[in-house]
Amino acid sequence: MENRKVSLETLMVMESKEQRTIDPHVLPIYATSGFSFQNIEEGIDAFLNPSEKHLYSRFANPTIDTVATKLARLESYDADGDYFCLLTNTGMSAITTALVSVLEKGDIVLTQPNIYGGSTELMQRILSKFGVTIETIDLSDMDLLSQKLTQKEVKLVYFETPANPTLSCLPIEKLAALAKEHNAISIMDNTFATPALQRPLSMGVDIVIHSTTKYLNGHGNGMGGAIIAANNWYGKIWGHYKLLGTNPSPFEAWLLHNGMKTLSLRMEKHSYNAQRMADFLSEHPSVDRVNYPGLTTHPDHEIAASQMAKFGGMMSFELKGGFESGKRMMNEVDICQLVPTLGNVDTLILHPASMSHLHVAPEIRRQAGISDGLIRMSVGIENIDDLIADLDKALAIS
Ligand SMILES: *Cc1c(COP(=O)(O)O)cnc(C)c1O
Image (cartoon, rainbow, N blue to C red; front, side):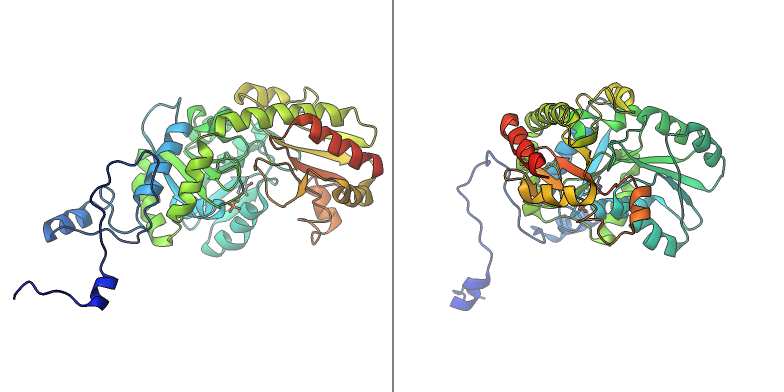
């Protein structure tokens, strides 16, 4: 056939490549669902070695993988061995993918009452449908944990430190070692601390989870999650990931990449500001109690100090005036924003009793440590004197 000119409508549809570009300095967004093979041999090779080539973006994508590799290197910075990271579209989907990958029917999961609410619901409402039993215990009680671990069905210890709402901390190395001793896996959600402040893989934890929506992105403009584990977990977890379809969009992975460049600077400032805020609130007459692991009065201060480089930006405090004071304070702040998320550059506050936990019965709320006057604060990186002035004004009225 002669080399005939294609029609206008075909020209509109055909993909084209710009040939003049050399390596971009900043990570480009590969907004493509598939990757073209030059010939059938390349296609066969890609399908035989799907983890080594990019072929379909639900399996892997150059933008997503570049960001994932960076996060794997951060989380495993001082751990022995080789690690991978899979990025997901939310923190919840990272947790789902990890749990579904490692658990089988009949397994028992040991966890604590105060993990992220979504994680608790996922386990109790969804995993339980597939024959997994969830036992919620006080994981700071090592004797109880050791005794529970003697049940041979215990496959997994799942925990978070620091954890909402009181910023209670658990000894990571001890929990990971106890789990290992009883042939159980340990999974830890490191969302609050990030690898800038705490690296659980180096303390023996098997799998680390993140909601990258929070500090890792840091700017509140994208959602995401991450699973980081040693390479021997790769086949199993990736095998589930590609079938569950929990991959993020390349654009959101790219936003995460931008955020991660300033993670260290941000965590330093978050920690400094939160400590100053905690000191200020501790002295305030309207405040009953301040929960911040950086305060020497926090019951888990010693544990936190032994495993965290700094104490992070999350804190909570209780107002003496209870429910009504909490509500009033929400309306009197100007710089602090009422937003039900955390880990952003700006300061976010939440009154769980009137916001996130409004529909939870007061007794259940109190069991979870959420008193009527409890305020949760994700301290941002603004000038701390401005933040303290904002709180001082709001507390004077509430
Ligand atoms: C927000 C959060 C999650 C869930 O992450 P999403 O990105 O909202 O799905 C899980 N764990 C912790 C500790 C969180 O703060």
